[in-house]
Amino acid sequence: MSFPVAKAHPLEVRVVSKRFDIPDANTLPVYLAHDGFKALEKAFRLAPEAIIEEVKVSSLRGRGGAGFPTGMKWSFVPKQSAKPKYVLCNADESEPGTCKDRLIMQYDPFAMIEGMLIAGRAIDAHQGYIFIRGEYRYLVDVVERAIAEAYAAGYLGKNIRGSGFDFELSAHTGAGAYECGEESALMESLEGKRGIPRLKPPFPATSGLYGGPTVINNVETLATIPHIILGGGAWFLGLGLPKNGGTKLTCLSGHVNNPGVYELPLGFPLKRLIEEIGGGILGGKKLKAVVPGGSSTPIFNAAEAETLTLDFDAVAKAGSFLGSGGVVVLHEETCMVKFATRIMQFYKHESCGWCVPCREGTNWLLLTLGRVHRGGGRAKDIDLIREVSENILGRTFCALGDAAAMPTLSIIKKFREEFEAHLDGRPCPYAPTLVPRAPAAGPFVTV
Amino acid sequence: MSIFSPQLNTRFDELLKRYPVPRSAMVPMLLYAQDELGYLTPEAIREIAARLDESELAVHEVIGYYSMLRTKPAGRFHVQVCTNISCLLRGGEEIFEHCKQRLGVNNHGVTPDGLFSLEEVECIGACSWAPAVQVNYDFHENLTVAKLDQVLDKYRTGGVQ
Image 1: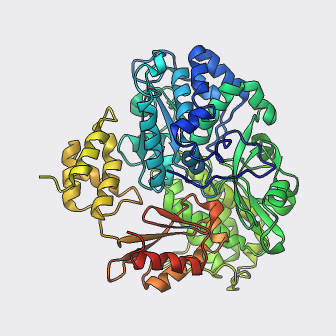
Image 2 (image 1 turned 30 degrees about the vertical axis):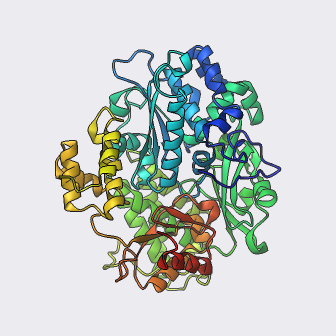
């Protein structure tokens, strides 16, 4: 399948996206002509421990959102196991503001496949699955075609390229559920069940898919692996900052002139991303807020955004998360109450219902936020929203509850005056740009 | 006698070989069955349950969880409008309102001729190209109301099969 090439911005440092502007790099001959499967050949000459060590040296951290060191994750898998081990690729990209894994699968699916093979070799696993969200059907087709090409050329299957290493790989479609991006829920779904999270421990490294030791990584993480093995961990580390090695795909969206997916070295200043790459704020308006890493990450106001640099530790130090790399920019005419309400509408919809604080909390928060936005709020509702959010935090099976509570708390804290401006039946000050939605059906019960 | 086409049955055979546990094929089988039939009919559910040696209840339990699976017909062209944050900031709600007016249906409605159905959906991963709409599996991005009208017209007049 052919796609128009994605040209680089001059400030980009392209590693994982280096083949995005090579026509038809998603076909095996073109992939092979551009360093394809060279890292795998190198990995076959390395001991499994040496592969893991190289990944550790690179300081590669999970690109799906949690930022956990990949090499360490791999090292948790026991060497001996009675049950088969698995390598899973999490291609359930669903965090609002995130649209990067889609491009890797579209332009460079073999890099992801090669990364999975190297992971399999490192932990001695011989079966992999790529879990792709159901909405990305065209990518299931692209990936299945790539897998078939790899099998035909002996890069998958038995005794790969004479190495004695076997690896079977399949793509697997989801059918619509944000929660399946949570690693244990993804495994439940892959086992043909409702995608609800598992109690941890045990962690996937010891008991994952079908109870076997499992490594699960994001698409971008896995697609980065071949570059690290080929170029060396130290080289990759040097592209970024200590403990924040390398580059990261950043999805710029919202009120900027040039939204897009850009690969930037970790530690890149947010201000330069918005101004120089993003071409500034839409309509020459003023910046109001920035979501740094997908809708679940606490928001920054304009003053905080001024000095922020985009790496895991700097964003964490400033009180949020680099997350999945979904940078959403909001200008001065955005209603923050409306924005918080829309975020909660998402988490309420996606809560799997397994545990009470998330299932009930997100519902009550949506009702209360919606009430404030429609002008029916009472002064005490603002603190009620804060309290309910605080009571979700840390009290759920998986991170979805936190994902709903964290942005809400940050918006209440940093934009409280906007909530106050909606009280006492006053209309939304921003109504012309963001039309309030009709009230939810049914009688409203007062908390 | 299977209610599915020979091609789909071949695909099911192939799917079932991929996993150590047959049940793992359930979600893909349901989605592919829905693609062929338009929705998951009682007959389809019965046949998939039998094929996997699971109860129909177990299949229903799974269907109820996944937002893309449906047990009622949708339109031939299922218009899914994203209004999540990145689309919201670029006019996703205006696009959704326009779809309602243009198609004359509400959220989850189907036009009387069965050609279109409408659904407000969560993030479809088109954030940097917002606002975006998915019609069946096709993405339409960087939309304006005028561009959306062109897209809908193309489906209506048979420009897209």
